[in-house]
Image (tube, rainbow, N blue to C red; front, top):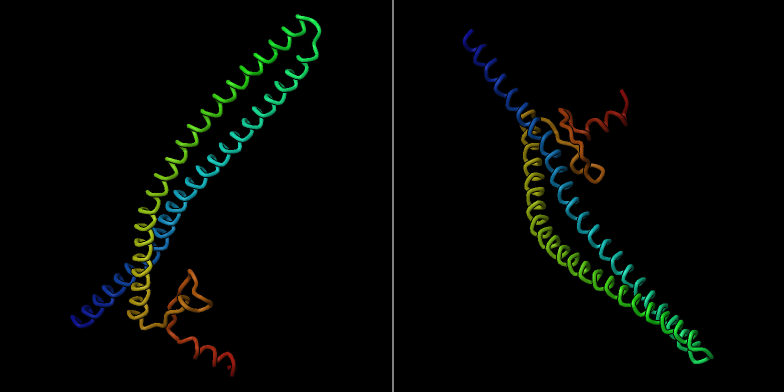
Length: 195
């Protein structure tokens, strides 16, 4: 009877080991996905900052075009000033020119603000890219280690159950793997020949 209990105990230990291996195998893809998501979210942050930088540049160009339009307007006022016949008209054009010159100064200040903002964005992009490179390398190594660990546990499960591992190379590799007690080539031959 003691032999039967020893065998039962050994089987229970094997069963517990298999459940442990299956739990590890189930958990590793989730951890890999978390790391990939975190790595990708940091990459997305960099892309958003680059889009902000692009928008900033577009806004600056718009302000520069605005200055050109104001200068054109001032040029027209100066041409019209040459044709005025009264002091009142001359004074009116002078006031318009002063007003537009003040507008140019205001727009130039906005351009300077945009340039400062652009420098800040570029600095944050450089910092984020540097941090991303370090983190991505670490995460990629962790992901590779987890994939190796997953492969090890898959093979161990197949070995422990004396089964055949499928899914890792079939159809270019899949996220789902399975252990079959019968080799697939035997099953394929049985299907071809029929019952």
